[in-house]
Amino acid sequence: MEFGWTDEQQRWWDDVVAFARRELNDALVARDRDATFPVENWKQCADFGIQGSFIPEAYGGRGLDMLTTIHLLEGLGYGCEDNGLTLALNGQMWSVQEPLLRFGTEAQKQKYLTGLCAGDMFGAHGMTEPESGSDAYSLQTQAERRDGGYVLNGQKTLVGLAPVASIALVFAKTNPAAGRWGISAFIIEAGTPGFTVSPPKDKMGLRTVPLGDLFLEDCFIPEENRLGPEGAGASIFNSAMEWERSFIFASHVGAMARQLEKTIAYACQREQYGQPIGKFQSVSNRIANMKVRLETARHFLYKAAWLLDNDQPAMMEAAMAKLVLSEAFVESSLDAIRLHGGKGYLADCGVERELRDAVGGVIYSGTSDIQRNLIAGLLGL
Image 1 (cartoon, rainbow, N blue to C red):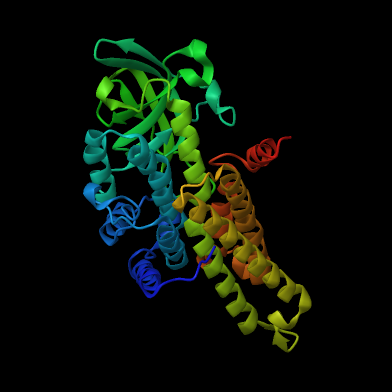
Image 2 (image 1 turned 90 degrees about the horizontal axis):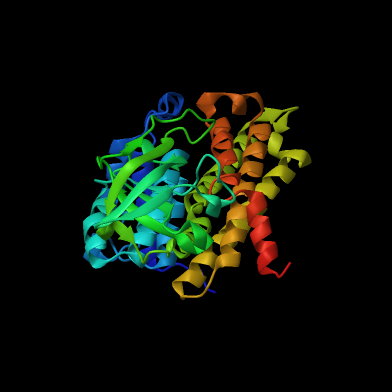
């Protein structure tokens, strides 16, 4: 695998970093404090081509290959300090847009992908329920066959972008007796009778991306809004998770690179006992560990992108990427706070915000323990 970048790919990186620094970081401390979702920034990202990066031009995208897309998203995280915004973008791209592209009908792609790429729509992914998280296929949401479609009843929880969703990709049981093979996927539009959303929930980190619940009460969905064949929901979900786990941290890798540079600069500037603190071995060793974590994270990220770009399975690599990247971001954020000392504990510094943002990564898209279980199972254990 060769990850050297062409001149065009490097221009993408340079352009997205400059764009993010210029447009996406204003008033971030206040946005984080007030849990404000930056809708204008979302639209600016769409105009730049973020949401449509890997989507074919026929559906409003740019048609970039996967390695170029991931390089672009890493650059976005390097330039944009709003980890909530970058997570929301990645969440929609991999858990909503990618399944639509892979499993949708031509009519569904034309209707929904164009709006998602243009930034005119927000897409949510509804699988987790109050009583089913890691055990995803124990979901209770039901979809009963009716003339011309289905009636859905149930609740989804901890759904990114739920409070602002234009559409939601929702999984429900159409044949409970068939277990996971009796689950189907549905595209539900905002405003559909019987479909409501909760207000945003307050949370520890990633406060600029709204998180909430989806409620379905005798909600009729026409058959044309089923994604894929009836009973294909588990296959669609597994495919989406392979892509999401591989790439949802692409922008966080860029954030880790920015975090490392900021910490090095502080360690060179801050003096104690007559010398920069970076000269103390306990400080320099922590920075060395941050560098090792960053390069390890990059390796897993780009290996998964290379495999999927070449139509090879990446279930193992997706689980490893999600595990390594999420835990590395937490550990490096803790090191960054320790090395910044008391200043790093203050909100204005921005270092403590990245720790709060990083913690959620060991939970969403499958906890670290679940990733270890997946890896062990794929090893035959």
